[in-house]
Image (cartoon, rainbow, N blue to C red; front, side, top):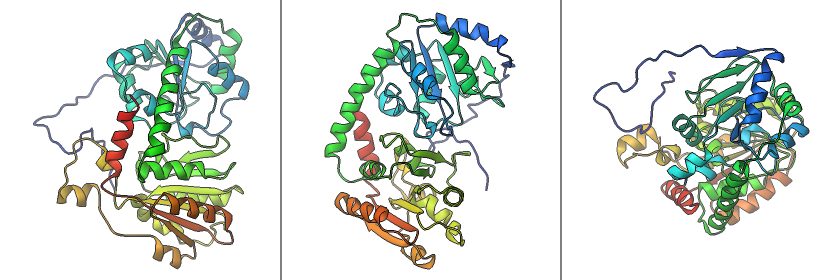
Length: 391
């Protein structure tokens, strides 16, 4: 198994190499509280500050600090489902906000200071945005390491996010700014367009993820597999009491089911794995153990292959694409469920999905699989229509 970083579009070739090794300058490292004084001064002088959070365990910031950054007029906070951070003013669906942006809108969003903390960021669009519209300063907060994801890293601050933002809060001085207000207004507009589209959207991956996520039990643990599942989950809101995890690694599909079962064994909470079909079948041997809790649930969205490859630009409908990229198949999980003694439910449309979700979370005694079948060749079109409808 070899991981190779391909650039998009995946389906084309170039006559010669387009990437070259580049010298990476040494990044300044900051350790003591005394060293943070200059950062507080820069923070207080800037009217356009962005905080972007990747993967975090719940509780990485106390509520008073969440309120501090969420209510600052000069701060836009962007989170993902795996950030496990919530505030009414946070931009929780990044791609919903920025996908329809024009050049003028991107310039309006471009921060002077970017502060990041947590692990990997899912959104490719926000990474592309920050690589093109670079901040003047990029500070990454982590006690161990900092990656120059956007080619703009200026400081690695070796503090916990809790300690760093506590210091900023103590030294904070209000500055006149419409930055957060303007971006929030755009996001509110996009949110209205989001719900309007979903109300009339046909059954598809997007509609299935909406219905699934809104049905999850409060206080449960959600494990999401990689590829399309984690990306669709970024588009739809769900209960803030749910802790969200994803075995991101190098974005590979392997091990998601194993990780979810391990988490279910270690936690007394209701654990739900939300996965696509290729990732599920790839790691199906994870079901072969004697320790799976009876309240463990798998929701398998089966679109007949690696549907994310239809979303990526440049794909062509041919044998090579279907076999080697999308990995088209006609498999289902029924025999696996029977072999490993899981209860098994299916859904083929929105009404069946609603009924199956009620059964999935109301009946107990054994772990269970809900397999949701969505239209293989329609999902990418509906998702493209969704993003166009946000403008």
